[in-house]
Image (cartoon, rainbow, N blue to C red; front, side, top):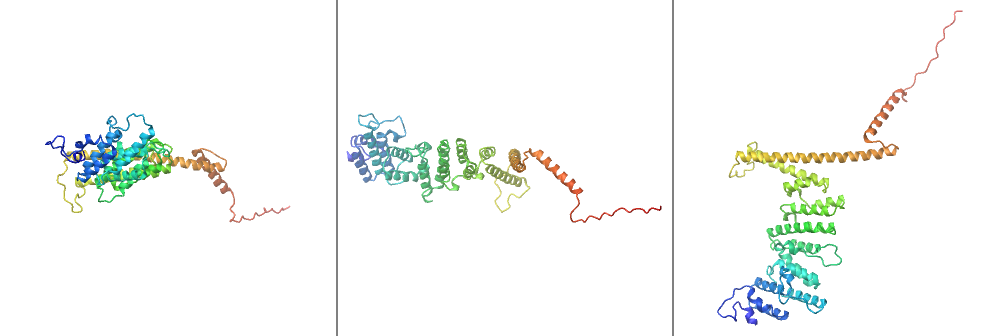
Length: 421
């Protein structure tokens, strides 16, 4: 049996070569017990079979025992551990735990030998049955090597801890992403980093719906990757907006800290327009978005003006463009720029009006407390008029009074005329 499982040619049907795929050992391997399967895998490794083929054998064998590892909920093998049996739930649970720990122990050490989604399903089962921490750490290390191959569905592992209040195991994903970010530059490519950034943004958008997700965990996961990992911050902005919708009680200071994750220069025009009209964002973040959009628009206008001939398109000795823009294209571009400028001016006017209203409210509140000390609480306009009347009365009284530094002239008594009589 051992030789038959290890060779790519069947001894049952001599003369018919079998393809070097995992299915050539599945029918025989699935009827063996766990100990014999481990010996079979050791024999296959000794024959020099490729690690990816060994990994596919292990993955298929595991899916026959545990349908949860197959990724298909409807698939059930003949040897499934989930079939109803007279044994107790505790015994079945211990069997699953022993099965998962055994599978982790025989995984090929080479990278990319096991599909990442299968490793995530194995980690989900390992957390559910409570395997030893060393086995979980080994699975997390292998997953972090190829996290760019993971799917959002498999990454959404539920939390099986009683101390965790969230539905998803966010702390697990934070560890995976941080371990991936700590890998050497030679082991992870730039494309892999971009894929993981998109995966993290999608995961954050789903996890943000949980009202028990803390702000610290959200920020830790959003800032786990370097800034150059995201070419655009639209996905991160969508996740932050979703978090603010699900958590309306976030303080103003926490909103500012949350918006620092976004680089306004990396927002698309659609996302910038949405952010400029978003009442959940702090005013400082909205102004920063408007400023960045205005800078982009000015830069766009400068370049369009250079193509129109008002500015040299080749100031630094750069090569001229291969094809000049036609007049129709230039007119269409100018119309688009005009529309963008009108939209930007409209949003800026709304922002200025909001800022003026805030300043009026602040001034009104200051005047309220100033007049309250005097025992008078008029409105803002009436307070100004009262103040003007007081000033006028003071000036009028001041004109009637004699200054201190001016000496009054002595009053002489009237002269009496001498009588001639």
